[in-house]
Amino acid sequence: MRCRLVAGNWKMHGSLAANQALLAALKARLRQVEGVSYAVCVPFPYLNQVSAALTGTPVAWGAQTLSEHDAGAYTGEVSGAMLREFGCRYVIVGHSERRSLFGETDQQVAAKFMAAQRCGLVPILCVGETLEQRERGDTQEVVGRQFETVLNAAGIAGFVSAALAYEPVWAIGTGKTATPAQVQEVHAFLRALAAKRDQGIAQELSVLYGGSVKPGNAKELFAMADVDGGLIGGASLVADDFVAICEAASR
Ligand code: PGA
Image (tube, rainbow, N blue to C red; front, top):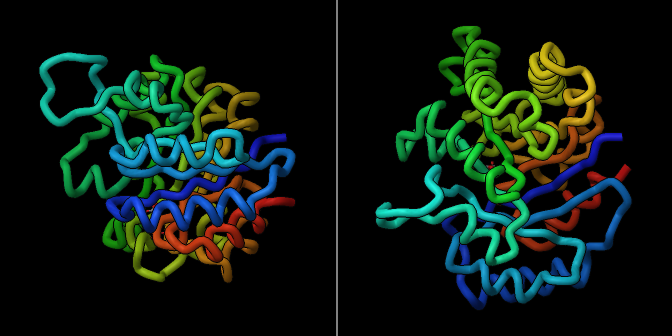
């Protein structure tokens, strides 16, 4: 059976003091559940704090982006090898905020995905359409192109150790969640794209949903056949909410 994953995306939030309280709550309350993984993806400066707090717990950690380069004169960038040194298991690539605010292209996202895998990190590849694209009927074309650029570069074998996250841009941080049926439709489409290349790998691929997941809607979203967990922004900063969402992911 495919693994479920609930990953928090802290974005550019946190402080040493606030993180300490949040991490202590996760450590105290999250229990290992067969087939379900948990993670927090945090700002780079907090990786040391997070690794100290979460080592030996069921909660893994990761970063929110990485450089597509392995090393060199790239001022301000952070490599996958550096993330591994801090015990990261995951790294988010291609989040819509990186694409829209920092100009990351599909090709660059593919290069980051492969850079992550060169270092043994598990990339969580984000895809998603804007409201305008959805209203034009272009959802499948947009998410299909985003996914296939990475499939073409990394091959389907690259998805043996990776997760895919469908995050409609219009649902991120807006309190407007896609309906379970809308989510299922896109997830099934994405899995079918993977299945054209390899049935077995497609069946095992964890496809997460992200966009205003809250304790009140997590269960119904996670109940859909092709939804294997979530990528959680705002609610991952509130211990009670994140714990409740993680619990909703256990079957
Ligand atoms: P949200 O963010 O849960 O705050 O909508 C999700 C994300 O951006 O990953």
